[in-house]
Amino acid sequence: MSDTKKKKNNKGNGYLPPHRRKNPQPAQLFSPPPSHPHHASITASPSLRPRFLFRLHTPASQGETSARFVSSAVAASPRRPRSAAARSARRDVFAVEPPSRAADSIADHLRWRSAGPATSRRNLVSWSSSLLVVVQHGLRRYRPRRDGPDLDRLRVLVVDTLALPRGAFISDLDLMAAFAPHSADLDDLYRLRKGDVRSSPHGQAYYFGEYLSQGYLRVEGHARDVSLQRLVDCHLFSLCPGLSVRRAWPRWADRVLELRRAYGGPSNGGGARQSVDVDLRDVRRAIVLASSCFGEENALVLAIMVLALQPRDPDAEQAIVTHLRSMFSANETRYDDQFVLSDCRGMPEIIQYQRIITALFRPGGTALEERLAALTLDNPPKDSPERVAFVPVVYSLPGSHQDKSDDDWDFVG
Image (tube, rainbow, N blue to C red; front, side, top):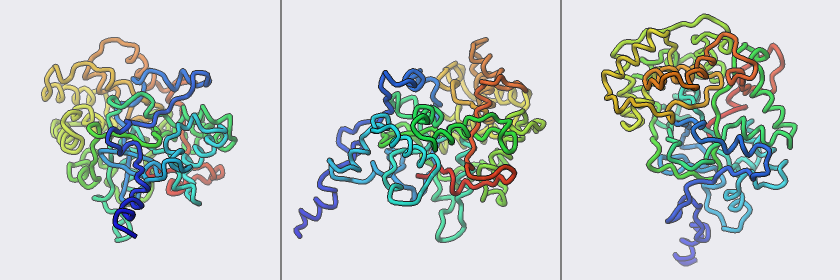
């Protein structure tokens, strides 16, 4: 065979995925038709989307994850343009017919069923709005052996969603709500994830802030990629000592719940808040970590997210605000609701981040402040986002709850 033919075959007959072409498309968008019953909620204001989303990846992850591109397993592989795989990589999940087929595919992805050839044809990619969830998940995957990733090979990608087109991401709950009527399997999972915290095994909300993208996503210029080792070197464990407990690294879902329990409140086990003081050194370390790992342009906001990994009482939160105001100019701390509006859904580390950044920006008596105050009440209303739950273990019997996140849920595609 000639060199020309070999080159042509190695490139999949000259076909390149859309995100790798000379003038690439920025994203494969979620676009429900106007007639869809969930069209209004899914296409709502992009300010309701978390400003930052995180994704854990390793060299063994399916698809492609880098500071330039993120793509699903099927979109990352060069295919013949008219092949079924190539067409599925370009097809919006809302355009899949029949809808039951899309619903089954979503259920398989969210339950992380890895058996069979369908694994390599997945077109969805998982993210989380919680840095705590993603870091603990990375620690769980740590293996001090040759056949497993070390902390240098475990990487966290953070993307600024503001610069990406509307429809690039969708929350797991919104996607499940749209397709649950077409699949009993997906409907069961949807009911578990949005269930009342009073019915969960530990009286805590099993919600980890999952968001999804599909197909291909061009994030160049809007993302940073950092290793867990770099985060540790920048004093992550000093800022959140709970993450440094090595005997807890093999666990994930239950460990996140344990760390959240220190925040107190009904959705976190009902215990008392175990507040941690803060000093100027902690704030400086958080800023150094955020700027060196995630970039100076968003260092202030991500430093607050890091500081929120520990429960703080109102005095400590105010101390953080005071220290930050002494380090940043008034222009740098001006109000921007794109940093404030986010998806709390009972995640105490995100709720605390909201309180701190709202106090820093001082919007002054907005409806947002009332919403944040409601999220901290001991008895949130029945329809409060704090009551939304996520249960990753879907096969355990009552009274026999186990952390089976290795098999049942994962951020690594």
